[in-house]
Image 1 (cartoon, rainbow, N blue to C red):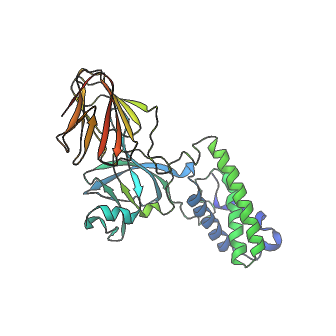
Image 2: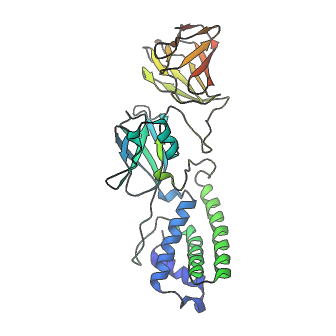
Image 3: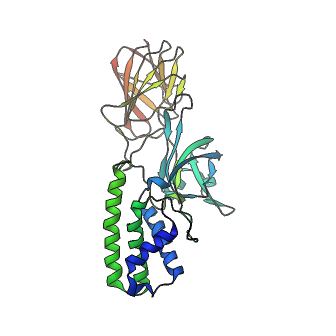
Length: 336
């Protein structure tokens, strides 16, 4: 990890002896700090990622003070360490349109808040990119590994030349910084996930709203559904399934799954029974399922459940949020 003194030395070389005298030590320090902030706005730097916990009360939780932007908010089964729910960051206005006015105040007593739906969630794991600490003393250390140094100082040099009305020099340094950043990010990708697979949100995401649901979204915002689902074993008697996954209930008592409250057309969930208790797919208000020539009772009283503990059924969303088709792949089910 580099200190401010090391970055200032490299910045001096980037500026050149004849140009160095134009900029004070304070100017150079400010430029370095600005460059660090902007690099973190552009890249999900692994060394700045951290995971904490956010506690919610009536759908409101306090944003960690060192959070630059959210990356992921999720819930995991403490007994199995399996993901049970992932949350989607949505536009603030869209969030307001679908919820009551009690959710429209985004700041309370000047403290930034996270707003979440459903509002009965209590505590969630929160993965986020930390805001950098402003470097003021030469001994202050960044969390960047040294491979980022050259790109940071070239970007800082670009800002200094821009402030000095040297547009050509500024543009040249900026282009060099972008090239170096691309190379260092490529090096990071050899050790961490690439930008295409990281859950990167907007640079303004920390002022957005995190909306819940039992759905797992990929980076593009589309539903993560595949023809070959990822399989998870479920040992509990209640479970909130995610679209794109297959589940193997193993409990001696019946496992009750509940359809996601928010779903897109084409989302799929597969249940492959194993436990002696069998399983049931329950519904939320307004939802229904069509199985063979029968349709379940609309709402929370309707369900499809296994007859044998080994029954296998795939559920496909046909009407966004509400309508699902249950395709029996093995066995025979009960429809109510």
